[in-house]
Amino acid sequence: MARTTLDQLKEMTVVVADTGDIHSIEKFRPRDATTNPSLITAAAQMPAYASIVDEALQWAKKEGGKGEPTDRIVKRAIDRLSIEFGLRILKIVTGRVSTEVDARLSFDTHATIDKAHALIGQYEAAGMTRDRVLIKIASTWEGIRAAEVLQKEGIHCNLTLLFGIHQAVACAEANVTLISPFVGRILDWYKKEEKRDSYPSAEDPGVVSVAKIYDYFKKFDHKTEIMGASFRNTGEILELAGCDLLTIAPNLLAELAAMEVDLPRKLDPKAALGKDIARIAMNEATFREMHDKDRMAKEKLAEGIAGFSKALVALEHQLAERLGTLTGEARGAAARDLFNVYDLDGDGYITREEWGGADAVFEALDTDRDGKITPEELSAGLGAAFRLSAAPPH
Image 1 (cartoon, rainbow, N blue to C red):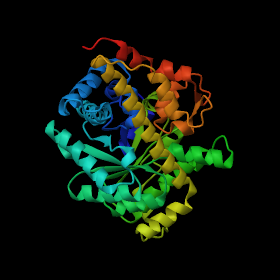
Image 2 (image 1 turned 90 degrees about the vertical axis):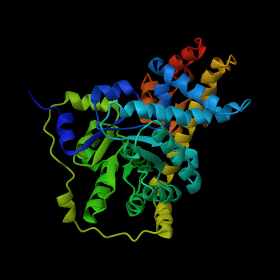
Image 3 (image 1 turned 180 degrees about the vertical axis):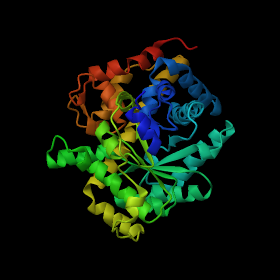
Image 4 (image 1 turned 45 degrees about the vertical axis):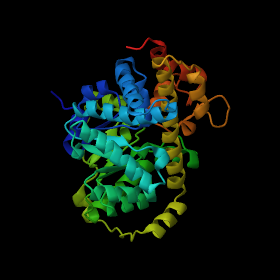
């Protein structure tokens, strides 16, 4: 029987499932799994996970005092929901799960450390060891400094929203466990900037960026793992065969599982050793100077933080709606409120740039594939969640 392209990829690269959907993880059996607020939001809308959502809300309400404001209960419930999904995922995968710190803390080192401690504390209270959890933090200077502290405490970190070599080098020198450079979002920026519809896979700016980081890390023997993320197509994935890890959405995993083309290794540590690469002396001044000059990285980092923050706001709306039902105080109008969170310019559509969250969720909601989400598409896509909110508690 011929080996699939996915099987071949797994022989040279650790494949990670980029989803919060436990059923997809069970189907593809990756070693690791990574989640973010957009993916948790999508998973929380599925009827199969209604009980997990309710348990998280009930736990959060019980942990607080009488008369505690809804927003505080909901924020605590989001942490709990992330932990609950993480624990269920860890029963399936043999490796690690990434759990994200609130993106709104991205420029606050101390708050990021505190949130990481709280998340790890809940995992450990549930009997899970910290070596199976990656705390996911945005690759700001402040986030990298938080990760440096956490790593020294034995808390492993996944630095996300990474677009530039300066972010990667700063992470490596902070000895973080893993970085997640975003391939597809880099491609999006260059397509818009250079007014191009596509690039050959080998010339894809996102692919080129990750290959550059890979060669730098291997050349200078950095132990930080590189996990390519945010893919637009299988061509990008194939060009990064040999990368330490790749986190891939279920639809692209399915495409790779259906392919049977031979897959040569594209990234090789031995080849990197022979390349002429200059070492970067990294400090805060250099980081900020390089970041300011790299317009793509600067814009995409800001956009990514805003997108993940919006995803949290959306999840807060959704959980507040459900909490209202559980407590007999149904709120209503949730779909409209969610739409207004994302429709920044008020033109009645949500574009990919306005969305800013998980690409897989955007594509699932954009049913007519025109690159924008209408109020009707959002309402239909979230229908399961709101039907759950209208159902009696159980």
